Length: 191
Image 1: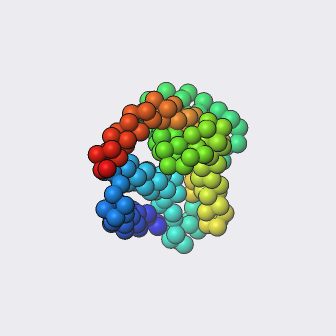
Image 2 (image 1 turned 90 degrees about the vertical axis):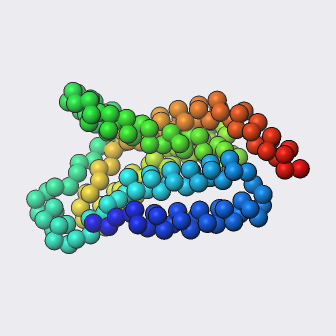
Image 3 (image 1 turned 30 degrees about the vertical axis):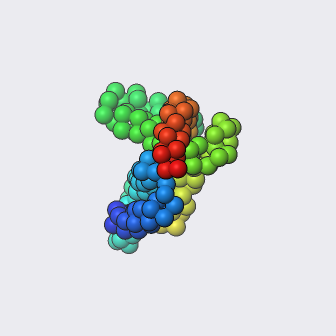
């Protein structure tokens, strides 16, 4: 299995060093440094839980192909959500439905803070849809390369991801005044 954690730690360490250097050189605030680092950690987290581990052992892949162990794709809206919830297993429901709902909440908070065009709800909705569909497409594409459906492509994941990111956008609208108030106080102190 190809795992992401070691690569993510190396990437984040490099990013952390560069962001501290940038903060010192450009005299940005600790809040900006902290939020930027949280955003990078969020991106690495999403990559690690949506795409990895990738099976690369040929014997394992051949066995899975022969026995039809691949996951099933779902292109019918709300079908897998209904199936998961109807099992009456709270822990599976929370992990599957809740996890997909919560996964992109931080996108709704960070994207409008860092990208000016994303503070319009229409633009942000399109971004959230593209990010979630992009994740599903990458899972599908990797599965095609492996000739084994190692992850399921599920339209319900897109619905839940986008819904969660819109909740994140609402949180952004609530915290935005406070965030910029703190930043402006720190800017005034630097002068």
